[in-house]
Image 1 (cartoon, helix red, strand yellow):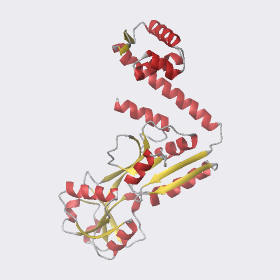
Image 2 (tube, rainbow, N blue to C red):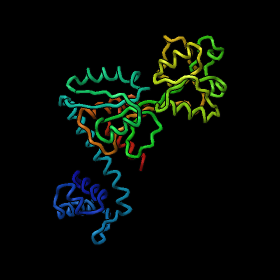
Image 3 (cartoon, rainbow, N blue to C red):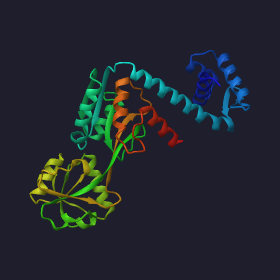
Image 4 (tube, rainbow, N blue to C red):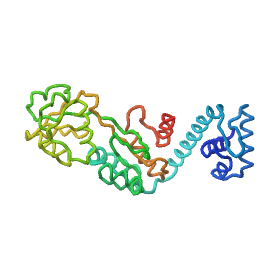
Length: 311
């Protein structure tokens, strides 16, 4: 079994045609056909039924091809890993980040990335989700740091972290000493929230709706810091993600017990997009901040795992 034979088999499965597979692999069709036949002989099974000009994958082929893809993906991971370790990383990466994540996640990671890859050029753009998705599509940005839910089928999502939501109460509120609060415990309160267009507002409203709480919105802003100031002044209560907690403001924070009261942050890339080394290093690094199940995965490994899950 040879690596090029695995490539040929996967190309045929992708294109559905020996001729197009040969073009993709930049090899003469007779040579490709001969190598696939040799592989089938070695395996003792037919991988494809040749039906005139069309090709149909056999049951044995459907069982074999996922393993062939996995081998090729792991070989690419190994090749890229060696290349990255033996070459200075130069190039540029443009990163889009939503405003409710940028001030909390990006400074430390950006500094660490710049220290590790001093020759890389990193550009950070802070914008709302819709603008960043368009940036991914027109290739003006390479990766976007967004929050779920996302309903864009052309995006590939790599998890970064899932964090709980907290109720923000003024100091002295009798509920501030509780270990947990349910959203129903805030029913009837005035709320201070982010303005329309911020994905965290949609997440907050969705969690309230699920808990059958209709928030009376007394103040809206584009920044968590303004919301905390209003809570400290007694204007109302608020909801924030764990990363936005600021102990220097006169507020108390109590974790919400509702099942909907979490936020998942992901790195989003355009599906099928290829990356230079510095872009790959950035995405792999920030995706490595995910849960223990994903910790340390490279971009290729995470993509391969996601493809296996989708299958």
